[in-house]
Image (tube, rainbow, N blue to C red; front, side, top):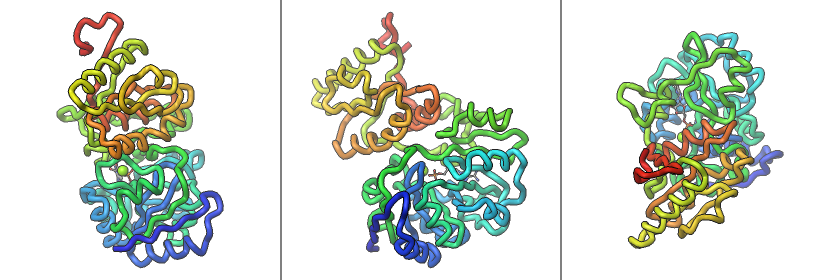
Length: 361
Ligand code: AMP
Ligand code: MG
């Protein structure tokens, strides 16, 4: 398949160009487009054949449901059975924006879109290109992240082209995204709202708006613990993984820097190319072959925005082994660490000042 690539202005997209993309989606085809979180791979959410095509293009397991994107609050009514008052309140504060809510679905939403679940995930993105495209496509776009399954989510059109060129009808280039991590997912099908995936909208913000909010136990479990499975099916899969093994090194700054330098020197002695994800404050202290600065510890928005691109960069640089500082920052730390831990397959090395145990406490 030949993939058409079009460029649009992120703030004031050309309607005529987007209209063409809207026709593709209405006709059952696929178009990747920018949102404020990451790039999405869009198809008609109410057409089961479109959803099947999305799974095929991404190589995504078909039991991993898609998020339905809407542009107007009223579009929620026909696709969900009921809207709990708490969800309505949250929508008022956070939509359009990086928030996905889970509801019981109506018959209008095909099982292919919901991955066979009786529930549906819905988000109203704020990106002008996304909002315009949804309206021009019939109002409901199913869109998972526009990456091949298992790879880091795309934050630029170049990432999407790398993964999906030849597999989809169109890719809309609207420049780099703003947030760089996928939406926060909150489940409203239980008594108390439950966070299934952390994102820009964090626990504290949700508690301020909703009062009591729970965290899905699968999120806090160390690694893939027996019997504790995340409720969002997608959170169970290996994800975001760079090709080289990644280890997170955690502890006091000096100990982390020293240990990472030891490890990368050991790797170099074996002829391996080692890469490091470093915060701006420490980047100059590392001696590895490839050191990527993710951003200042004081600028968590930049850290979040750079993470997926850096993981992809290491793949193109053909690195053999990777290390990262822990990025547990105050506001977005839970969201960033959720992705970093998955990328590392939960490989964490703890180091301390009185480290007598090979770094493994
Ligand atoms: P992505 O679109 O790649 O960000 O993935 C969508 C995420 O939303 C995946 O982790 C899905 O498992 C999750 N999701 C979508 N629909 C539901 C649902 N009905 N219940 C729980 N999780 C869902
Ligand atoms: Mg994804």
